[in-house]
Image (cartoon, rainbow, N blue to C red; front, side, top):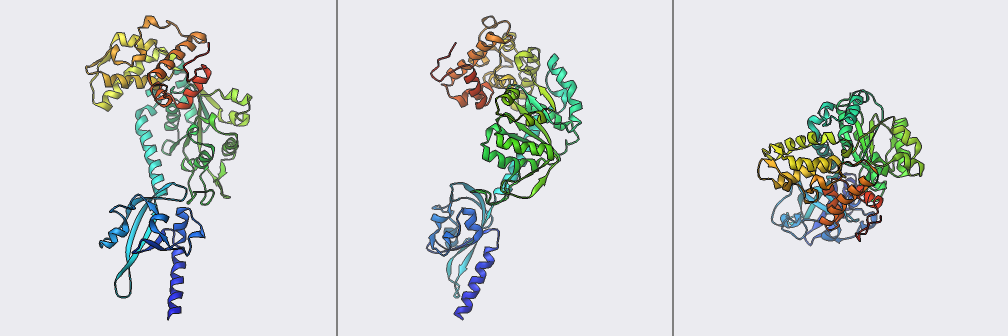
Length: 463
């Protein structure tokens, strides 16, 4: 009989090891008496935990341990748990979102002797939900601006760009959008997608500058379970998510040479393998790339592949900085006033002539994004229905006569940009994150501008 019971016990363990959800059993002293293979892999442990009796709050650390929500404490109170959401800390310190279900373990006399927990890793469902929310938020944010005619701009440079967009939208041609940060590269990319035959498919955005090389490769191409430490499940890459749609590779100039090789293969053969995988995956994706760097110069100095450069710039679009399309500033101001009136429930009618003169003469190192931030700042400060000069940020309240009447590159443009950045840095106590936010540019762009203008944290500026 004892041998039969042992055989049945062993058979049960084999069955539980085949289950994809994590399973553990805990006795009344909060010791784990069994843990299946899926749970060990979820936590990042191999076979070294097998056969050991360990305290549950040592092996399975979660945000409900040592609280009245502890599932064992609830079992002692006679409560079963169903689809209870909690975070579990795995071996490398990451927190995994899980869903927990429990039931009682009793002996032959019906006495409670422990608890069984079935723990489901919710990383993949949450990730897909987050990606769907990201796409939805992007569509809501861009809204009607997906139509070319609704992109704000009537300057000659912008009219030339608008005249080209319908033709490029109707093709599968790769597009490279260049221009300084804040000039609207993502907006142009989305407008191309929204007016293409792929408009009903996904528009997937990847900020290449925001991710390290290893993470970027996994984000772009996905990975298979076990490809590296912490890869507990197969993950879809952005190219797979964008299949039949469009992928927008922002700041492509920041991609490493190793990843550039893999991007080139996708462009040329429309195929790739996931990180750690051997299966070749075919995709049909329209690529729109963007960069605020001079990629031609990057090709010359060897930091960007020449073959990839010419492959992504089949159709190049260069967006002018706001200081080179000043006739669009009043239109953009009106657009942002209307936007914030709608979003904030305000009824601001106009911008005073004095404030408008200052806004028209400002150099905008952060371009359109900075102008949007300035108008939002004014909405916060303005309690009437007219935005006055005093409602603008302090660093741009100088009279137009105190600023250069004409900014045309060379040293005058350099000094205007230098002056604007220094004032924001001084106002934020040289906190680069806060300064980049107020300027409407990314931290990486601010760093590049600081280097180009020879600005050091000691506030010393070389001539």
